Amino acid sequence: MSENKTFIDELLKRTNDDRKIALATVVKVSGSAYKREGSKMLIDENGRTNGVISGGCLERDVAEVALQVIESGLPTLKQYHLDEDLVWGLGLGCPGTVDIYIEPVKQTSMAYLDASGLHEPFQDAKKIDPFQKWVKCLQQEKEGVLATVMNTSSSKELFQGSRVFITTNNQVGQFFPQELNRTVCDIAYQKINQQSPKSESRTIYLSNGEWVDIFFDVNLPTYELIIFGGGHDAIPLSKLSLQLGFKTTVVDPRPAYATTERFPGAEIISVDAEKYRSHVVIGPRTYTVIMNHHLERDQASLEFALNSDSPYVGVLGPRSRCNKILDSIQMRDEQPLSQLHNPIGLDIGAESSEEIALSILSEILAVRNGHGGGFLRSRKGIESNRIHQPLVLDVRETKSDCLI
Image 1 (cartoon, rainbow, N blue to C red):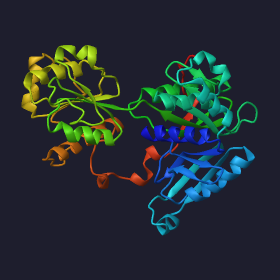
Image 2 (cartoon, rainbow, N blue to C red):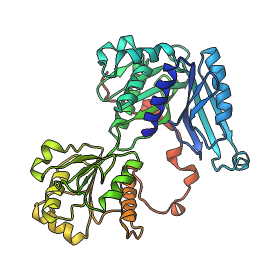
Image 3 (cartoon, rainbow, N blue to C red):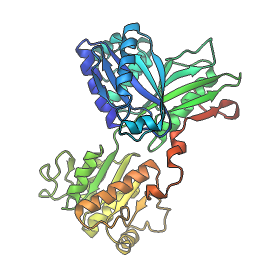
Image 4 (cartoon, rainbow, N blue to C red):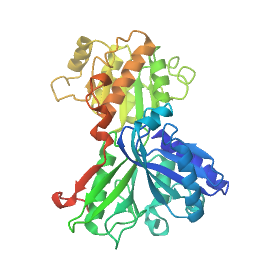
């Protein structure tokens, strides 16, 4: 999600300079490609670009199309067939089909955002459009989904570029008919509640036989990593975590260890265990690693983490020691501890602190993304994996519980 933050910073910068700009977004990928759905590139009226949407084989042509879009003020959906001869001739390895939606960015929308501040309430939704709310969502690093019509068989109520913006309990804009709106809302809620949802296009079939292609552009708050313990081996873990885009926090009661000099870029919380509840916040997208090298602090940290919403609780050290801690806090047989990982990390033969940090973060990424962490060479059909394919949803066979 850090790419979205970079994108929005550049978007606001360019609109503040009064330059006409277009936004190009990868909305569908079939087969293999260098970038995935949701990748974005900005193009200004002078043809200057910011962002990456391919391995270098599409940017020039997309920029040319974007200049036409800026001139006409009309969006366009363009499909590129990247045959293997073409991409390998360019020194790239990304054969496949890529759909890119190129649209002008309205100066009035961005001017409104600059003037309104970041905390304007949703009750003023009638004054703004879904794109404006989505931009604010990126600015605030909040959760939200922007649903955009890419194509449709309907000629009455829907058109390319129609949008709805959805958060956990709010919606800006509305699709018609209502069954489409409910289905889009349900899909958006599902994505918001997933640990690592992907932006993607889906084809939705309606009960009247019509169909609609919808692109779901997903933004989530920054993932977090909390490290209990500020020892020497926590330093490379914090550094790598920050490089991977995690908001990183180090918790250690020892003033000599919990310092910004040792952990630049990380938040430092120097409190004893009895103050965890008032100073340490663990949410559903907060990953925790316990490496105090101190039995009592490890016991307190583990009990606190296991009673939180953390999807991943990693404990450094051998299994026998972790079992001893679980026995001491009476949690070993109390419940299935699916979020507990011990020994911690992927089996890569790590020995140094830097290698251990890589092993731990690799496991966290695998858990977050729902992958097993094995060798890619052992994975069958990776070129045409289903996660790369657009999904089709038939609302005629799906019951929706979404309330609008």
